[in-house]
Length: 124
Image (cartoon, rainbow, N blue to C red; front, side):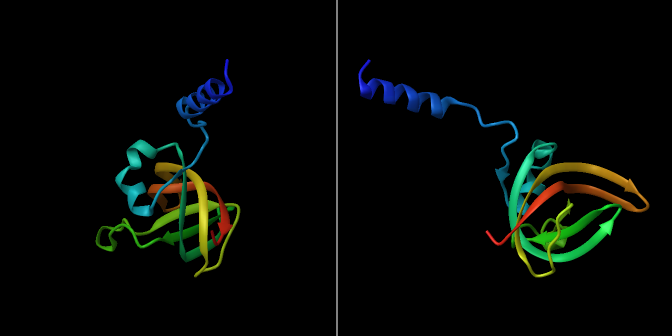
């Protein structure tokens, strides 16, 4: 096999290889709302500004993010994220977590859409 053929074969295998099952897909908040059924149970990565923080509620931190996408009139511009990590209101963060639908924690905490168990990276 020539070096060119070997390189071509390796490139073809790389392009045909499936994405790793746990690999997060980059999305906007508006996209997550539009594609929520398809994204349920999958890892997503999103970037936004923290607009609200509630720390240590039911042993987790709840953050609300906005990224300029979605529609404020129907509430698709703001997404709630749960994490062991936290950030301050006004921080620009990137989160990676699992999309969950219709989660009821009890005690009045019911969410039709949530990004759960997220990791938080400041900036980026």
